Length: 88
Image (cartoon, rainbow, N blue to C red):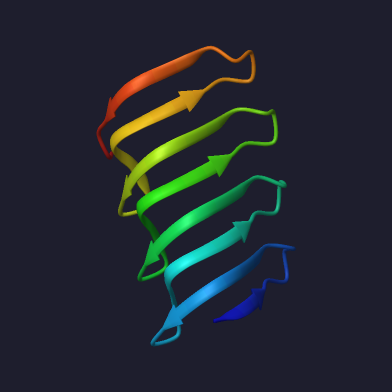
């Protein structure tokens, strides 16, 4: 477990493997958005929650850093899309 502070203000706190984000972690991005969940080889992978700065958030599965599989996208106006997402 450790922390990584980027010059642009991004912060990662979580597990590492061979110098890469790997396992459960927290990432705060330059714009203030945040991700909580699983990483594999520096990418979002498995279950995670991404919180956008406008109040919207996605909760669900990721693959290779993209939404992939079942998830819930809650828009800032609280409307929801519940269903399956496909990466790329």
